[in-house]
Image (cartoon, rainbow, N blue to C red; front, side):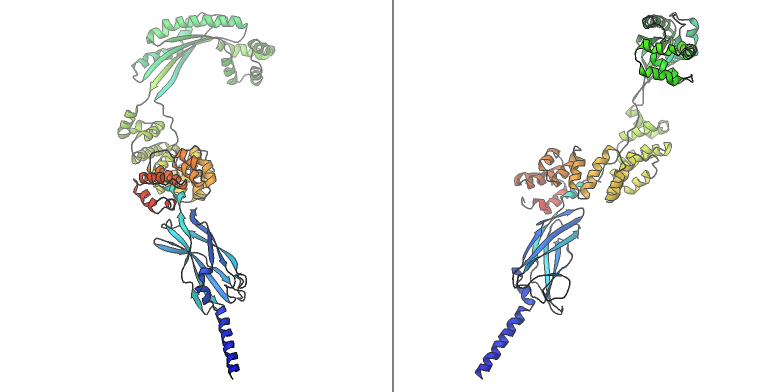
Length: 555
């Protein structure tokens, strides 16, 4: 009897042992036996995503053959939590299609988690939560404590958007000239091999117009004759030495004629510069180009092939029929002296323009309006001037300028409305459309627009797009030499801290913050704290620094 009772007791103990070995609850109770790791240990947000890869290592005789384990990565932050994709693991006698862990040997299983950025994840932890089930999933046991595997989250790249509306728009240059230089000209002609000035030449319409011009300009407060040039020539036929002498004598007679007639009436005290220019090959070429003379292409080819005067003349004379035509139509026009008045016109001053824009802006041409837009104070005032120039002259440069002004204030819809009126789709237009896309956080569209822009600002804006897309090496390359916060930040993101230090030298809150990150990464806690204190003059940066994981080791 005792023997039978002993056998029964032994069987019961064996049964209990078997039951305990197949009970999933034991896995939850022995959770501490499972080893975990995570890459990275400090989470980083890249292009709006937070990615982590983790592993679970199970010891021998831990994972029950008929158990199913569900592991959920959870990003826990101030204000909430985000659950990642569930990783399901099974024992050897579970007939599902999941990763299998041997009871006898244990094993390692890998999982991945991806989370979208939300405000607040800058201060977070990544933890694993687990629930184990029996094979039929009729019983479940929650692991008693979540397992922390990483801290979060480094969002340093987002500094590129701090402090204003991201992107640099193009304001196209204007052609306004504060001083305009121009000339007024007349000329007199000579007979072949002569240098005396014929009286009729001084009565030509050209000469009369120049005389009146010089007289009238004395009453123009904005215009001044700075000098008068007299340039005398000989036609490029005959001996070069003779032609040089002819030009010299013509320059003297022309000066005498100018003083006794034109300048005597104008009474100009501007200096008179006299030049004997010799043979007028440049004038010859210009007249031939503008003529319909036979075989003019052949003549121009001779001029391009030979530079020596005598050779040119010989080759042209060899074309006898052509030379006869030249002797009648072109060469007589080159036996001349030119009277050239050099005039300086003083355009409206800044003060005058600022006054006119409020009183009689209709008197301003397109260039004056575009220039005035650059000197008025305040974006609303600039926008009003650009609007007027755009409407009055259908000026693409004005619409681009208006868009740039609106983008500086983050008024995206108004910028788009201005850009819709641009008729000349040039590099400035595509760059500014890219800035619109940047501010709308459409980085693909921004990159597409920038690919069509040759504006210098496009390279900078492409660097911003690269940062937002997580392409930090490309960003550093595009921003190299650009200076400022964006270049320094790109260098930080590729961990080129020396280069970043060389760029981030400005005394401003944002660059102080970047210098604090550099110091923290270099292990210089005191320097990091000093720079954080400077940056904290900006309330937004002060709040950011309090939870920035970059400073976890220096607080």
